[in-house]
Image (cartoon, rainbow, N blue to C red; front, side, top):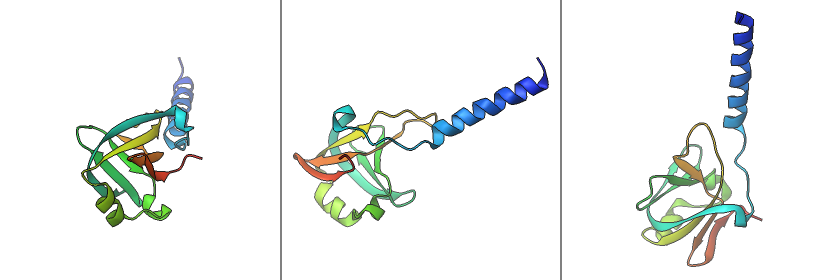
Length: 119
């Protein structure tokens, strides 16, 4: 096969990967969310004003995208949620970059909504 074929094929593959990587995280219906519950052991700012939650015994972290721009306050979240069991709901979403951190759609504490982007 010619070099033009391989160059074209490489371009198409890179374009598809770029689209998969850069597409926005979907805002799901609540019934379509994955659910995880656990004790909060760390809350910190990372990235661009993201709020990242670490849950005891979970390999993944969970984040509220631009949470600080959305009115959430680190100090308040820490005082309210540290060492407490919360429920996190997040969309089923695949990306070629990996799944070590999950986008949070909803946070609940004892049945009370702390944060949601679900209508």
